[in-house]
Amino acid sequence: MTDTSTNITEATLEEMRELASRYPQARSALLPMLHLVQSVDGRVSPRGIEACAEVLGITAAQVSGVATFYTMYKRRPAGEHHIGVCTTALCAVMGGDALMDHVSDQLGVQPGETTADGKFSLEAVECNAACDFAPVMMVNWEFMDNMDPGKADQLLDDLRCGREVQATRGATITSWKEAERVLAGFPDGRADEGPTAAGASLAGLTIATERGWRAPDAPAPVKEEEQ
Ligand code: FES
Image (tube, rainbow, N blue to C red; front, side, top):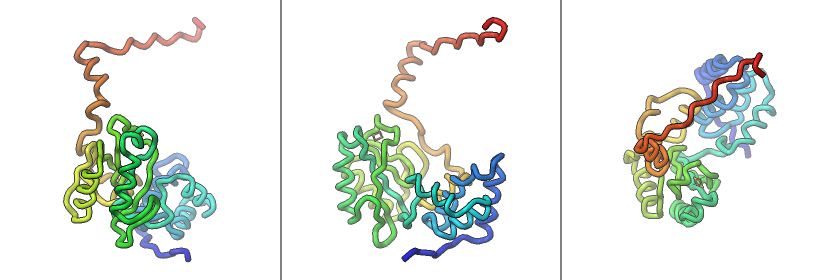
């Protein structure tokens, strides 16, 4: 049976209209609006789809077409914390597959499922462009680098007990709903918390700086009459 429950209010609709006003073409706001729906309803709810359609003047089918295309949009409720384990090739061979099996066992759910208490949802995620920190996990879209089963156990325990967790390259972990609100375009002031680049990612830059290397100057633009 379809879950039609919703927490969307007139205030949510007003925020949707505000998002739509940020773009020359209102429809361009659909992706952030869907994140806003998830921040309120914990998923892309039927009412959320209708609300997006109403605000943008498009059909519910058009909204659904977008919401079902991207994996970041959930049709079933995500957990308070959404756990992603990268199982793409490099992370997989560096321990990601074993890490996924371990986390799945610990939570008692398979990828794509949410724990019965609603605390955690689990997803196998594709490459996060963080291969130099493999294997990586994501918590509410924040990076947890160089993970192993022991670190994963500690992470899950800290989140379960409400202890503060700092992403290895990013902000303090909040909840998935709060993270979704930021993705919708309503900053929480944490964007500059924590390092955004570190370790192997910066090795080339560090060597270049030490040796005084710099990129060659761009060639001067060719004037039209010279072409
Ligand atoms: S393969 Fe996991 S971050 Fe690239």
